[in-house]
Figure 1 (cartoon, rainbow, N blue to C red):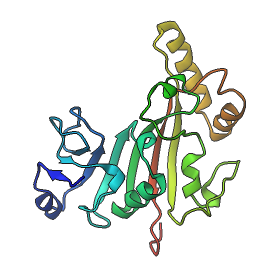
Figure 2: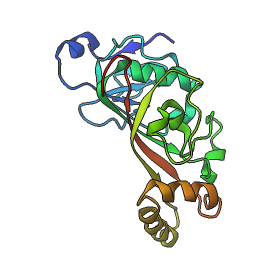
Figure 3: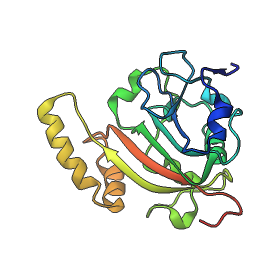
Figure 4: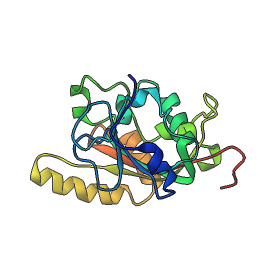
Length: 207
């Protein structure tokens, strides 16, 4: 679908101010961000399908990208990651939330295209920056460095939610506990989702 612009994007790019995108923003976009969504809703600044990338954005032009429950809908994750790395400035950051594969509600949404777990984004990371369990990164030359990854636990049942929040604090004390949890406990105490922050690893740029 051709993008529809409800703001003057060229003017925003020329301002040289901090450029922050919110993908899949819908009507609840945060102030100061450029909202991108495939639906023409109030608050959306660019109506476009993120599956087609960001051809309207130049390389190294974006400071931050935010999204919540969007990556699991993306059709071609490698292409999408390549586009994110392309448009982010060196040192720019991508903040995202995705449901964890053990989340029982994940299966109810027919628009979900993929499962995601603790290691998913490490397939785009150098081995030296990975967790205790290493995963292959030779499928792609797209590179990121994960700055933080947090497992989120919650429940619609108040008493259970309180206990899950206590468990969340414990599990996120270090990556060893996170890895132990996903291997041995995730189907006993399902994880709701993951909050992840990563930065692009640009070719020829020392970071």
